[in-house]
Image (cartoon, rainbow, N blue to C red; front, side, top):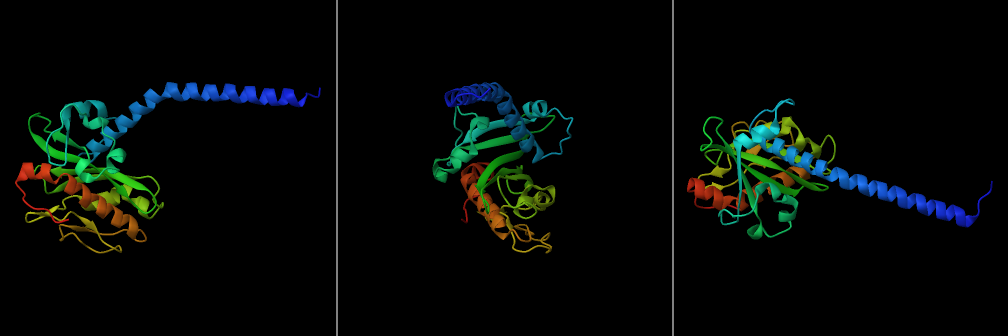
Length: 242
């Protein structure tokens, strides 16, 4: 039976409205679960910067037992009433570094909750195509890198996207951020295949991904600078080379 144009338009509009409502209700209903998964993934990445996790590990339980979190400002002072887990690095990145909030995640000893073994800092920056981010863990000396976890939004697969691989991240383990009293950070070099194991401030590069590497370098130096006063309060370091 042939329908009128008005019937077809009304039917299409009604179907569109119903489908839109169903999608909105579904998205609203799933948001708490999505937020929970995002929070759990962040906890996993924080822990993964200092320890190896198995798929079967209870990340939430380990995090609650081993992580003491708080927020400091550019001066290194603790900000009361602000939860580290609620600070959005992407939002803070838009501010001048002097105005940002800086979450700190202390990984405490498994047997002594009053002893901090590692300090994990979120970092955020820009790669070749889009934002990059991650976590950097320092050992108790506030100088030696225990581990890093990098992620990206749109770096080139097989090239810049390799920053998210264990192969690249392992290169940072054991590197130093201080030279004397100055923060010099750790810099990824141009090209790939060189041995930098004897250089505390350099890691091998990623072939074909020089700009992403420069983005990682800038991100690390900028955020070590942002955390400088907090680091200084822990180590009595006295100057910063930026």
